[in-house]
Amino acid sequence: MTRKYDAVVVGSGHNGLTCGAYLARAGKNTLVLEQKSYVGGASVTEEFSPGFRASTYSFIMGHLHPKVINELELKRFGLEYYPQPNVFNPTEDDGIIFSKDPVKTQQQIARFSKSDAENYPKFFQRLQSTIEILRMLQMETPINPFRKDLIGLLKSMRFAWKLRNAENEMYNLMRSLSMSAHDYVSQWFENDLVKAKFMFWATIGGNVGPYSPGTAFYLVTHLVGQTGMSFAKGGMGSIAEALKKSGEAHGMEIQCDAWVQEILVRDGRTYGVRLRSGEKIYASRVISNVNVKRTFLDMVERSHLPEDFVDNVKGFRSRGMGFKLLCAVDRLPQYKGFSKEKTGTEYPAYAHICPTPEFLERAFHEAKFGWYSSEPFLSPNVPSYTDKTLAPSGKHVVAFQGGVTPYELKNSDWDKEGPQLVKNAFNVMNRFAPGFSESVLDYKLITPRDIEADINLPGGNSQHGELALDQIFFMRPVPRYADYRSPVKYLYQCGASTHPGGAVSAIPGHNAAREILADWRWKK
Image (cartoon, rainbow, N blue to C red):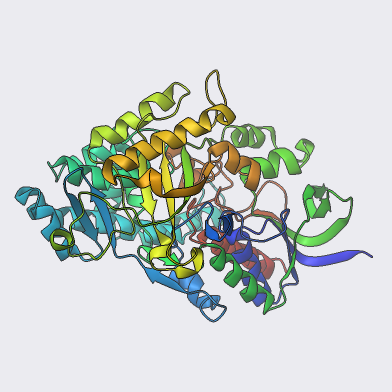
């Protein structure tokens, strides 16, 4: 039996589900194909030890765009989330709380530096202005500034008009794109703990230390989310489940255990996909949520693609440097520097372990030469402190994001070195939360190579690709095709390889659906 759809979406990561849900709501007969037996991609909740569940890859939903939450009615379809208003940065004998409340944060900073506390409002104002322009840019379809036809010129003019009153904000953004995170925060702060707190954001998803040029952009872009430091009840899989139900309510179909072997192309346009089983599914539009390298180097025959496009795709950098460590524990971590009285917080369920800027930078040094950090920086999160569905009564889940771990090790491999990396992480945690390793009942280590193997993400990069100057906006994923389209007619991209990049924002899926539907109306 021949199957034919208006649209086939390849991959059920959250952006694929978002794009499919929008297309279904627009009346398009849409099928989402997923190679695994369940949906979600990197937005999943899994049992990693009997009775203990955690968000395996992505872990925070602060980037999930409110527009998508509202338009796709995700709360109606079961999405619940709770705020985590504070992040604790411990030292060995003290610690500082950074809160979404700027007044509370300023008071905390004053405990360590009166000067830094006085400068915090200036820093916050500069940061906020840069964040606001980024939030606007996120929702834009990147222009091709060198397109010379009338449509291209009109798009460039419309984009420039939107920015006509954003001169200072654009200057600030340019500074973040070129400055190191260290230099950026040092404009306002002198205390090492205060500096390290903000510099920590520059390490997430990055491949170079926070003293390197361009890392200030990572700092800014990781604070751009509009849902705050929020966590999904039941883990990140509940976001995928709500997106799935939202799409299905409007007729979207999902087929799991369906590995797409080839995107079919004839006469310069796509007409469907071929599954590994041999079945062909026909479609007027094909949208790939898969990483740009997998899409165009593995699924589309090279003869259908321009040579320079293929070269640019090959050059798209997607090396991963971060690891995830999921721990089942029999008690909450107890930070020896934590004080309810000093911090005004009941318990630090979310922390960043990075006491100094040098601590962060040193973690990257060994990775430069093919090894892993002897003292990794860590971001321990205890989701079970609030969400009791994730662990047995009286026990907890501690989920670490950490760095730095290269994809490939020099003269060794992760099967041999994984246990030592875990030991290194536990040693750091024990330094700040004595006895932590003794509380661990079980654990699961996830390296960049594991991420690639499990969810088909080249290099295991959490952003689907580095957020460097040559891989953002109209350069992402490659020049001339940053508008969610491709050299193949009716073949689109909607994954995090596209603008604005990674994190569970659903913006690539939202923006791609908007462009697909616009083309559909235009080409009726």
